[in-house]
Length: 368
Image (cartoon, rainbow, N blue to C red):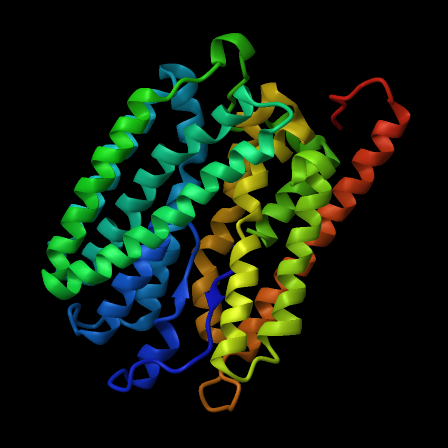
């Protein structure tokens, strides 16, 4: 998962460091809202001794914690069922936002807005990923795409609402209201959710090491590490193409951009497709390992994203060159290279699957 860095000028009253960091965000619904809070944290000296890297790490920790708990969540879902871990996540997520409203030290923000919110997202989100794939076969990617679109809409709503609440009420109450609203909506969703585990009987092993002996699994995990209409044209093929387009757009549009209008065009194009990981990871895991091993391979996929999720924003910060004309050139090259590299791994996976299907033309569910 690479950090998204938008090059441009901030408000006039923002100092240089704030302008350089305020545009670092990560994608998933609540992640966009953190970008709003990040901007506020940088403008106001609320946490004595805090540095821009602290805030970047908090944003990365938010996502890294969510995927780091994947094996534990998978195990608990196998023992207790889907809903109990998700309910724990709903409570933890709300607790993280509310406790962040009382934070006055940097370590408190790490614990609340970073760890608790991240763990809450992990416990709430991860058990829900396999469920759609259990209910859909032919339109599996479309179903996942619709739910991912909900994350995008939620991100816009939470970001706009958070910014307005900070301006009209206060930072503290913005965090509290966000936590309360997230609790109510997620609680209702968890109560209504229904899986098909009794029918499919998935293995749900948090660490199914047998999967690591498959070359296809490693190719998928390497794509997960680098990336961060498919039902008709092939899920692996479309995921490969969209990942490559993300990388090429960085080199062809983002880096040459010299004005805000072109940057907006890049943001629209890349923003429309950079969520390919979330839309396709569930269906791709089914293609590679089969439906029964879906939860196990998803756990491995989440672990593959922990390191880039935690460090990508900090890497982008360190790649900046404030003394040069193109401050963000190296972060831009880094982002483009990671997407192109990830697409190469997925292309190899597509090639291997095609060869395997050619050897077994009558077996549509063949896995390596």
